[in-house]
Length: 137
Image (cartoon, rainbow, N blue to C red):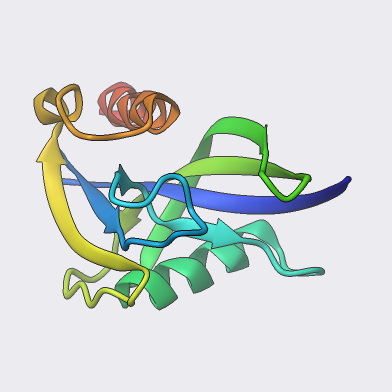
């Protein structure tokens, strides 16, 4: 079994979290769901650099990365264990330009996250992000 590392970001600004909708892909069981942006870390790439790169590639924006919110892992269908870390981040620019990986984006308030079409683990990470922002004041 191989292991790969991924990073994700809960991007929050003005009480809203930026979510992206996955494009349809027959190879991906999670297509069509809303998610938080991020992706795989390249060999030798620092985690934060990977997150900056992925956010720039997927959204065309820059972010300031804050603390980690969660660590997670799962077994992919191709016998690969994906190990990930989700970070809290805030945007440094607001002109989102989606990559072909996503079909839409939305800024949702915390109260809207409960009803959003999210994987339960993603919803939990987003709610942790809102909590961290409240604690930081």
